[in-house]
Length: 257
Image (cartoon, rainbow, N blue to C red):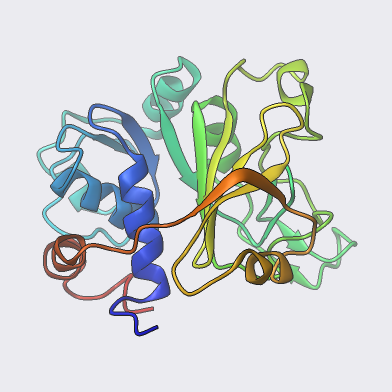
């Protein structure tokens, strides 16, 4: 099968389709920002984008290079502070957030702190939480965009930076986090996953063109559940790719990776 898109492009297009018109999404820079911008220019013109550094509902002229980039405040509804954004999250005003990390487990918990068992002398020291723990704790639906491989999808995190469904079942709610909040979609270059409602374990719901369920499982370090009706993900449409390439990221900061 000949593809006219890259792994990054299909992940961005899938993520953009999830964001409905009128929703509020907290994003960082990179692929999440590209997905939000694409959604605004296609199916969700009234999508409200907020940035951790304080920009709320900007009219992004082009792809920003950081959450504090002046472009994240361009014609914004509010040029606030990190405190304002975190308050909006804790008040339940933010529908979606995109997060990532070096590791993710079957319950959607994330590690972006260390690789290795020794916190004092890790094999790799990562950036840490930043605002990820706050966003994951208080935004209603968390989404992750990442490549699918066993190094990222692990049986046990080396460090729990950001809460997903914790240990599954009702553990997130019992920990004191808002009822109804939690991981929503995991989007990879191979598939899209959600979480089984009772156990809260990661579950394949669609497989991207050119891949099979076995490919997804073979590139995961734990057993994935399978939905009763796994469908094939719709590939990027020509119009989506044109807007992504020409209007969202013409300098290929993200899609050129």
